[in-house]
Picture 1: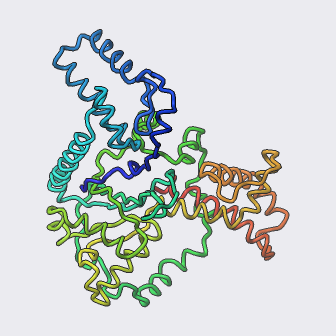
Picture 2: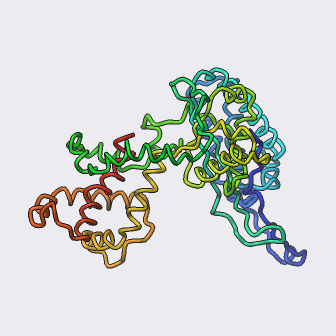
Picture 3: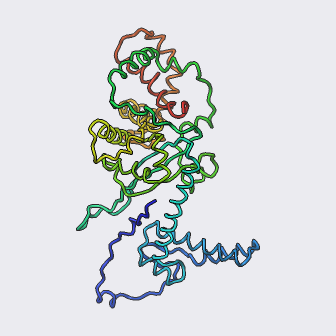
Length: 419
């Protein structure tokens, strides 16, 4: 895992003239209220003192107390470094006896990075018989100063997370995992005729009648909730959802906006020694969003059809696939955007709002509107069909019934029910 410098430290210093310093009045402030390195120190000494008193009451020995205090200091260092405290700020806190120096923080981060590399190798060796699912996604800290300077227009750091999830199933063999034609038109037409066209005549509404049933309020809330795996959330502590078995290969500065960017991520995975032997006989599916699908498939096509030397040969050991969560998020947003005018009128009618519904509302609001429309249609669908009949050919009627009977239930259940 690469040692990545904290991008938030890139803070500009305010120049103050000597005359301004002499003219300003010096006011003594307690350490608890001094802003150091752009971060306000909030009564850290008092927090440490209370922690010591609490541990003494618990009957902890002196040796254990020293270990606990070292962990407290490391936690403070990590917190100050993560929020972007400059090196000068960390060194000032060290002079006050609160934290260690900035050099010690960087040294500890490098040790953690090296220890993580050893951990990855051990896990990969122990899981060499299992299948892996790789996930590549981008992240950028948008809440930063975007004032341009002489070298860049923004301080936003574009990062990429590369995570693998080991599966209990056996490894996927590489034998004929990729079609050498990449796009086989004859194979596509064959499966369209034999598998898909036959089933397109049956609507999703008719198919779901076999397993539809009553749903409790708790189960309904579970379906409509997009869960977060942040350890700091109370929901995470009470839930069985976790990513404890996930393997973090790297968290590096990659934009993920081109073929070159998306070939860097598989190369990082391939550079692990255990993975080189693993990928020589097996393949790893990559779950990615639409740009990831497009650029990775393009890289594979360039390698197989054009023998492009710029593309590393290891990309053929990775199979891009669209994950069910990406399908769920994209389809739900697409249905909402295309029918926004209808959802907007329903929203204003139900909640008595004069203000229009946003074009890009929060995900929970989209789920709420889709669920309301779905439940309302279940109550009135028989009455509507009794008035118009099932053979009505009006284009508006067919569009609305298809939206309410098929599309909305499908996007609500494609991930929550079927996966």
